[in-house]
Amino acid sequence: MDETRIGKEFSHQMKSVVITSTNKLEDTFIDRFLTQDNQVVVVGDVKTDAASYENQQLIYIPIECESHQTFERELPTNHYCRKNLGYLSAINSGATSILDTDDDNYPIGDINSWGNFELKKVTSPRIPNILTEFSDRPIWARGYPLEYINKAQPIETQSISQADFANVGIVQSLVDGNPDVDAIYRLTSSEYTDDFRFKDALGFVFAEGVFSQGNTQATLWSKPEIFHLLYIPSTVSFRFCDILKMYIAQRCMWEYGLNFAVVSPFFRQVRNAHDYMEDFKSETSMYISVLELLSSILPNIKLYGDKEDLIRVYEVLIKKGMVQKEELRLLKLFLERT
Image (cartoon, rainbow, N blue to C red; front, side, top):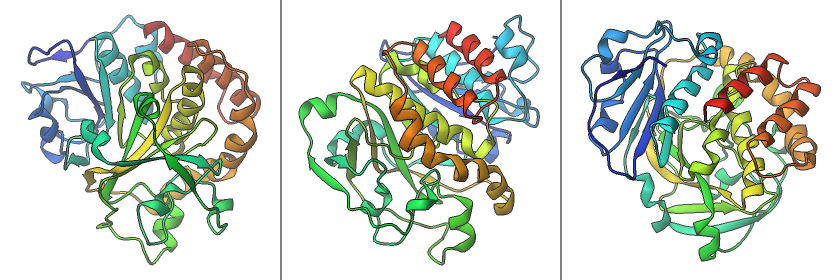
């Protein structure tokens, strides 16, 4: 992979931040991460002004790079899945943690301090609407099954143990400002605002068998043994691909004895321009399939706690028509590089 590498020396504990952008550097919040002790990796696409990333303290992966690597050549352009190149760069640079985020988010705190929050363990239901614990206003996250929005499902919690805390593999930060809700919420809810605020200093760790919504907006991956689960599918729509990725990651993590956590905001988003109806169209496959995915498909796949688990999952998803056959070939190329 040809990369523009301008940067500093990092300690053995190397924190990487991976971002994809089609904007000029000055039109993003990427500079907020450059002031911290991070290795910042930015992945460009067809529309990205690569010149704006020259001579910066970061790694930039341009669209026009010539590479003999099959994965780079065949990964689609004009697609969010190009972020996979950033993950590979961070992994192969020896990252010990990876912050997966977007160029329209900026940090308002240090996500690595999430353990200082008031933490609880969620034991049921299988698919809780965890945002109800962070806000008194009606809200649900993108990727929450529409069938459950008006279905009262009390969330049961218990005290968190030291083992529960130590075994968290992924921490999903909520974001203030413009949270990650779906197009239906944005189009229909009188509660929607671009200045939404969640409750402070709360966190929930999910027991094995309990799914929660995750995304690539502000997510800390702290266990290198599961970095291969960062893979974003390329044959899934833009507004579903990261949701699917995060549900798959949660299912696979259980085989490692690891769990997922959602915490109060460490970030604020000033959202890039979106057409809500275009978002709706991109989310349609998610609305149709997510409940089946969580209630019957993922829980019933036999996994073994190795990299091949991702292949096992995607083979089933291909049979179910949720991803295309081409996905498996790209996935295998990605796994060869991790």
